[in-house]
Length: 338
Image 1 (cartoon, rainbow, N blue to C red):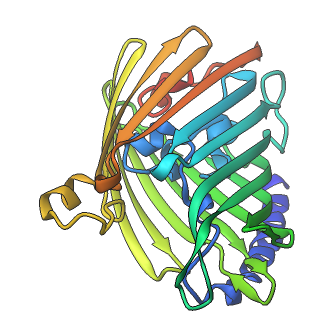
Image 2: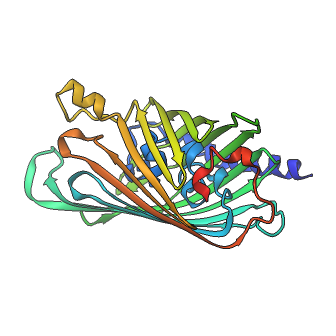
């Protein structure tokens, strides 16, 4: 009965999201939706379809929203991007299965904000006209996830997006994500497969122009080996007609986690130095667990000529813990979940 309910729900959700695909026909706008709020998955090359859990799963793979050992989890992320652009992301998750099973395992809410100042003012021909312009992007996401079977998870996110540019405000844009995650429970080398459809919608409209959303299909696999994890992911960027490959590694040493990754699409064309362009594809970071709190940090030079980008996040959990702890088999893949 539970499988039939899930199948109907998945079919309706997929139909609703695919209805936005015809609008995906030009280079995407709303670039702030491409920013990975999780320093953990960002440090591992942006492999977020498998490695983003709990509140961090909102905007990545909503299927993993309920992977939280306590009742509540809060996640706050801050990044300094190019030219002092300020990016912030706050997310909150509830695990409803800490006391007894529910079909809707997890519920989540997130707010994302990006402010850019000091841009050059130009006319319609692209010529400079003096002065500066700024932009403001924001989104609110509502997420729900379900533990369909002991191995299979499903999640869905609804997004409300609005942008402002040079004093002009876009209309309210609706978009959504779908996600699946399947775990293979092996004693020594557990595996996790994840897939997500992200930012499916009709685009952001300014006056008479509509910019497509940065829609993508992300598919990844994670393999746990002892205290470490290896992850690989393919990102098909639908609007930009581009495919990126990412690989990441994480090694846990007690409360400390060391991370590194590479993403083929991360390097930008700002630098004329070929070696610098290659270096821009790499990222690294660390994680530190302090009881029910976690600190994450990531570092990358993905826009080399403009300096390093830093991402930091604080996550903490509280409330009742799981009545039935997860098997140790999940340890390597979920080692940062306390």
